Image 1: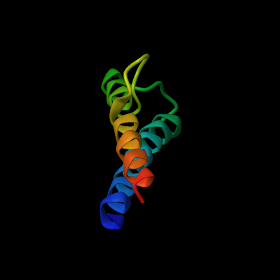
Image 2: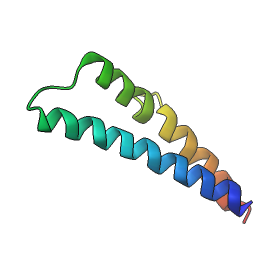
Image 3: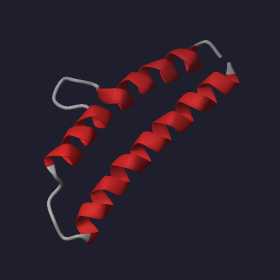
Image 4: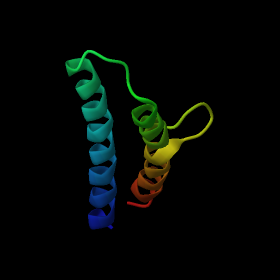
Length: 68
């Protein structure tokens, strides 16, 4: 179970790193996020009431942590 939990946490961090990289790139290039970048960030983080990939991972992580 620890391996599964660690894998989910790693996947979550990779998604956060991807979001940070997209934002950093737009800042370095002194521009706004593109439509594609914004869409990708919304998919990862969620938008409005949608949880996004991170939200779904958070739920899985919480479930695994409860049974440990």
